Image 1 (tube, helix red, strand yellow):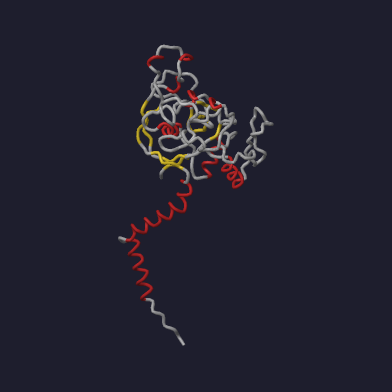
Image 2: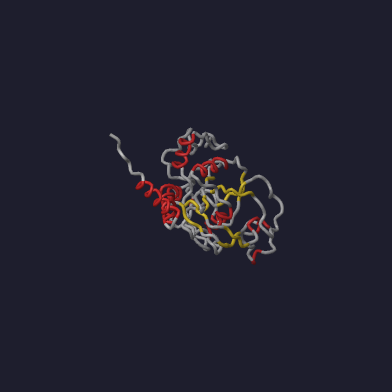
Length: 288
């Protein structure tokens, strides 16, 4: 006995579906795909990140009027921070916290990457890692002893990247040129800097006053951070020597650094192979 199958209705259904996709319903279908992408992929990547809107901000500083004419060693800022100038950057995301030991350990296990997180100056120090294991009780502390390639690889594994120094500075000081993440008044105790004499980092986010205008934590203190930028002079800089090498810019203060040298505009540098007990990182991500 033959069974007759009516193909007309299935074909009509297919046509209707195609009309929906290619017609007015296509926009709804596209929005649905974006919704699925964001909440099942992007939302995971953007977790614990803050959005920094695009636009101009004041980068760098000018020599204070009362200090103009003095020798470089007699002024309270570094010449490589000058002059203050406006910079435009597109919007982006940046990590709310510095990358922790526990997060970095997950990266090592997932990728089988071999990172030698040992202080080259003190190979027996208690803060060194033992293989893939960080010091006991330090899971929420920022990972340190990572070189530039370690930091870059972690960010790429997370679908992110290292921030530029322009992005880092804007995230720290906002668009109106604040001196520190928390404002323009020097206040000891707001951030984990040398004045507190803690002699080590604290768990990320444990200094609630060290909060930038965009709600990023620990940009004044705790540990210094890698950026993806080469060390170059600002437009109009009077400093000529020391630029143009392969060193990367380091930003932020830390538990070994005094509060004055932990300003958002302060610049430090390091060769890409540098490992230090006060050098960590956070990641950034483009909007698109």
